[in-house]
Each structure stands twice: as C-alpha cells, then as structure tokens.
Length: 135
Image (cartoon, rainbow, N blue to C red; front, side, top):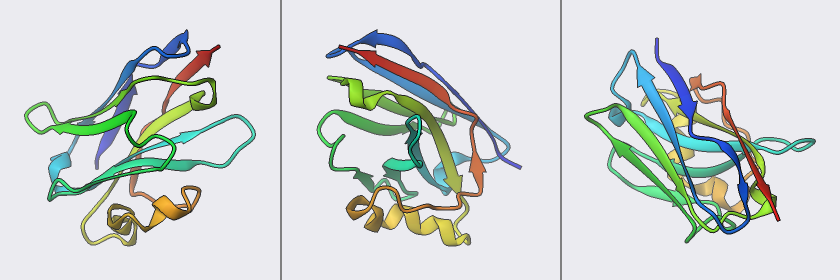
C-alpha cells in the first residue's frame, strides 16, 4: 500500500512561487506513473503534470513554463515547483500514483494535455494541500 502526503500549500500573492511536496511511503515512487492534479472550487479535477518511470514529463498547457514536476528518488518525494502564480491557479492540489500494470498508468502517456479534465483513476491519492493566490 502506498501512502501519499502533500505539503507546501499556502496563501500568497499573484506572481509569487511555491513548492509542493508529495512524500510517499510503502513503495518506490520512481517505479510509478506520478502526477499532480488540482481541483478548484466548483470544478472537476484536472491534471497539471505527469512524470513517468523513464523521466518523461508532461504539462497542462496553462502551466507549461511556470510549473516543474520532479522526483527526489532518495527521499521518495515528488515535487511541484510553481512560479508566477496567478489567481486562477487557486485550488486544492494533490498528487497521484499509478502502478505500471494499472490502466491509469496511461496518464503518463500525456494524451490528457489536450483535455486536462479527463479523469484518471490513479491507484493512490494524497489528501491534498490548498493553494490560494490573491491578486
């Protein structure tokens, strides 16, 4: 069983930066398809970034160039570095992981970037961390 715990959220001003962390226990994250997702109030969850076991990354168009997903395998921690944050980035952010044999592993193939609200049933989810950006 993989347990994911996010941290790093907060309330900041537009244009500032945050780094979110997703600490995993129970299995080595580097073997999974990993992703960051967010859900704004009143909206469905959307994919933001994906990272597969080969290091391939994908980003939603509205965060590309501002957000960076990365993995520290030694710490078994997934990160999301967010820069130039905007009020529309306000949401609850959570990480997800899919096993190699899982259909949700397809998240890391990146087709969702054309439709970020495509829902993927990742095998494991964290509870989330709130990010609030004020103008």
